[in-house]
Image 1 (spheres, chains in turn brown, green):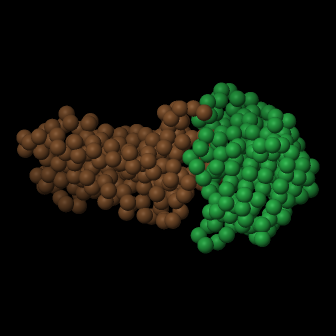
Image 2 (spheres, chains in turn orange, red):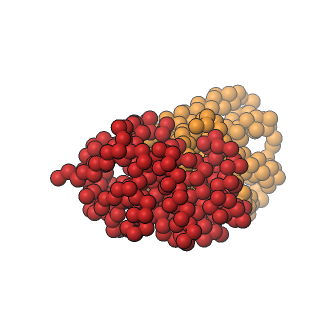
Image 3 (cartoon, chains in turn brown, red):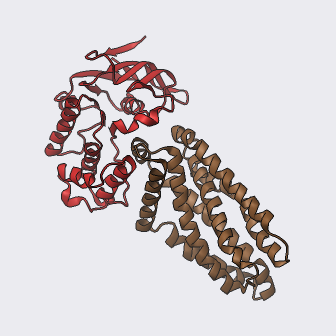
Length: 222
Length: 221
């Protein structure tokens, strides 16, 4: 029997290996995200003030949609036979939850990092308070990956369809979305953004605790 | 009515099912099952499609919970969290391969080896033992069904379980691989373990089974 973190990292490594081979999530959605960011200016015109005002908001909305996509993908990646083998390899469901979340987290960080540069270029966003961007990117990625993995676990119970994933992820990710946008809004107007960062941190921690505590129950009903 | 199969060849059974029923929704998949399996037993369970064979194996593998009755495996009630501690002692080969298609056969076994703390080199050694040395670096998705099943037997060979559960073990296998299944069962029994083989192919299973039972409509006889 191996330790919790060894098991979690084994799951992370497996998920990243499968993603590298299939390229289904990152290499399909990254261009999609960039194109979506490009389409908005084409749709609303070249009013630079408007673009500057909505740019970061558009970025976070697309990040949220990517989080939904990862969660939907997770519901389809494992067959019952594969889940059985993972269980009989002695992997604690909580470790599997953490491992899968970690893999999603890394994919989200890559996605956010690439797209934030695309957003800055396309929308000519003033870089006020951007020293906070790495922290906010990490918090949003952590929150969305934990939430997405939890949602994937819930719908994997078979009592609801994978189509329900967006209905779970989208509303529950609102605190993260608001926290991310308001952090930079506050900084732009010279106010403290700590309250928003604290809110995102608490939401992320709560999601992590909920996911770990419910992992065994979700696996057994799956 | 209580359907009982009592096999007594030791004092502490590896598997002990007492009046166990399993339901999915309102449908009874298994009804009032009593089964005791001791070390050295190789039980063949036969039945047609939908008889409850796979559900019985998954119950013994601690992968599903009984709706009523008591199921203990290695002395652990499968309805408790202690089942997580005994799962690595169980080797289960389902009728559908559980390999990850994007990963090579070697990576698939390596994944299990890492999770269980087994030397990863054992993965390649086990693949070689089932005649898949040349296919170790081939992705599972491009392997035939028979090769995938062999790889699953290699996994069981690597993990050395005390309880071997085989679902339709002879399907999609050539003659050499059938011998492999027999050898795997014999090795498990020699080490003091037990095996359960569910199948609709009586002839082949009876070559290795020490006892057998029929299952129909979710009841054992």
